Image (cartoon, rainbow, N blue to C red; front, side):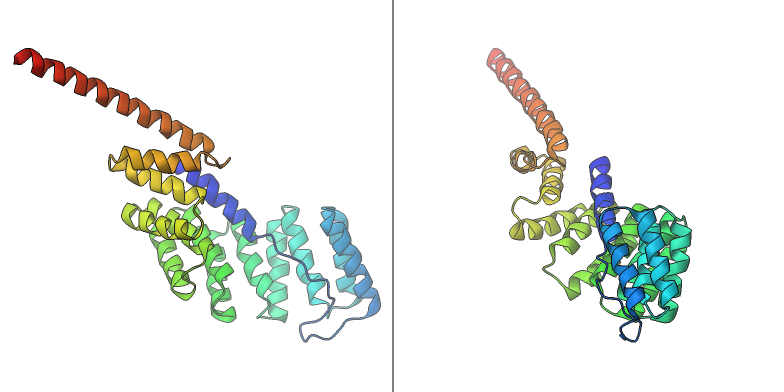
Length: 272
């Protein structure tokens, strides 16, 4: 179970850093920057969207050099550096963005990712806390912090963050799926199961919720219910192998139980 869920949560974490760059060229005060800077920025966007991050970085640097009011170009430099794997450099750029505009939401989202990838986990957690304090009830920041806490096995702390996020937005599937996972990893199987049922009420074929449901029933010896959940999870490519493994395992257990019952019935008949 742990291997599948680790893969799932890492995939979710990767999705959190897919931030859309603004097509506008403007400063922290919302003032439109000069034309040359704007042209360089838009050319950088074209290269960025084509995944030519080295070329994009050069153009973003040029856009910012031409007009240092172009805070979007500065942020874009940070994002390009993240995509190039230069996380420490990216963190410095993103800190500069926030020194210019402390409410720049995308920078608050990306800075802790850069710090975590640079190996500064505590700094990343502090950056999440700072972002949450300055931006307010930002679900993306709460989810990012919870994912990081989960990846470093601080599941109880992740649960607290996610429960607070769930109180603010109780029907958001993205929060519920991470909460179900965090409960599961923290050893609270009952809460993980209940949360999974809430997910399935919204998304009946939700693969992660089906796997958690199947595991819950399997651990409790309720094999028919477990098989039903696993067979549904078998339809999703990400959970197919895991579900098939436990379908086979449960069928083996059921065969053994049937053999035991037949043996006992024969012994009882012989004794009579």
